Amino acid sequence: MTANQQIHISIPKETLNRLSLTYGDELLARVDRDKIIIEPKKDRASSQTQSLRWFMVPGLLAGIVALINFMVQKTSHVHLSGANSISQITIYLAVFFGFMTFLIALFLLGQNQLVATNFWIKIRSVITLTTAFTILNFAITSFFFYFVDLAFHGVILDPYTSSALIAGFVGIASYLMMNAAQSISFSTIATVMIATLVGGIFLSMITNSQEDWWQINFSYLGSNLSNNWWQFNFTLIFSALVMLTLIDYIFSLLFQIKKFATRKMQILRALLVGTSIMFGLVGVFQNNRSIDWLHQLHWWSANLLVVFILAVIISLKWLLPNVTREFLLTAYGFAGLMVLSEILFQTVHYLSLTAFEIISFSLAFGWLVLLMQNLNNLYIENYEIFTIELK
Image 1 (tube, rainbow, N blue to C red):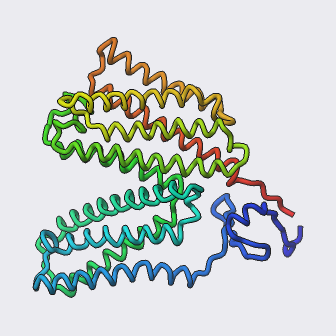
Image 2: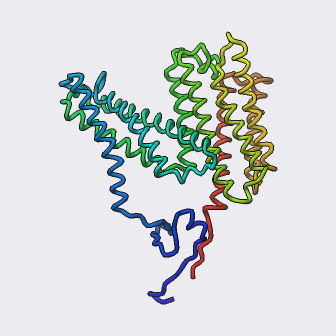
Image 3: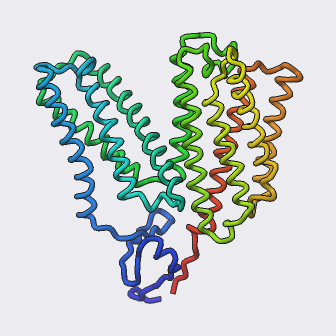
């Protein structure tokens, strides 16, 4: 091979079509350690202009709104925290403009990533994802200003400087939300689901006024006896919606591959959808013992959730194509641990009710995340990865 000799590669036509590329288009190839990464060539100037627009427009509008607010309120000195402060107004505007930015960006820039063919499923996914990222935006912005107030406590600025700072913070938040909308993938949706569930549950634990709640049971956080039961139940309901979005996303990808568009995979999807619905109903029906029918519906939803999970595990051997022996053993291991925890609680009385609920919940949720990851790998191995021949 001579130094100037050209090496050609062949790429499947369906891959070029998926990336909206045609014969003659230029691709960029770069070496990253021991890998060669090939990607479409982007117009750098256009990309920078687009990024500046998503940063400047929301930021400018937020700054104008903040300044008008200070003038109407006749606020000559603006505090960093408190009522009508920099932090309060920034949080409100960051949530509003972040929500609008994410929603618009998802429709304009990230619509190719929402592969669901059903219109209503796509609408539900858009609303769920937009709400989820808005909640994360609110939490991150609030924590940021909490620490800023600790570092610069007592700072007072004039309305114009305060408005400029608000514009900058809101612009950054909107830009990050735009990037999030463009980066919708299995990993981002799964991360949002885990963050929403774990974060909401821990917040319910921390803000609960009953310090020894754990001596009763884990479900106490969502019962009528808890002062913030709505927060715990909302976490379960919304996490179930994000899980449903993740299921729709991964199966919409898998059904693009002919060998996976089978009745068996549709049954597996139905079982997982049933699992997410039961998970959400555990939060919908409050564990209120003073209202017997409500308590019974909560109890049945929790038990049916376990039934659906066990049904998925037992049927994997017949429903999931190319399932490996190692993955089946892992699935049976999770099922065995759930049964063991049931025996240790009901028969041996070794586990307390709180420990049993936490262990069972952790095993069930961990197994579902592991299964979703396996389904995503199944798609990548059969669609995203292809052989390139050097010529």
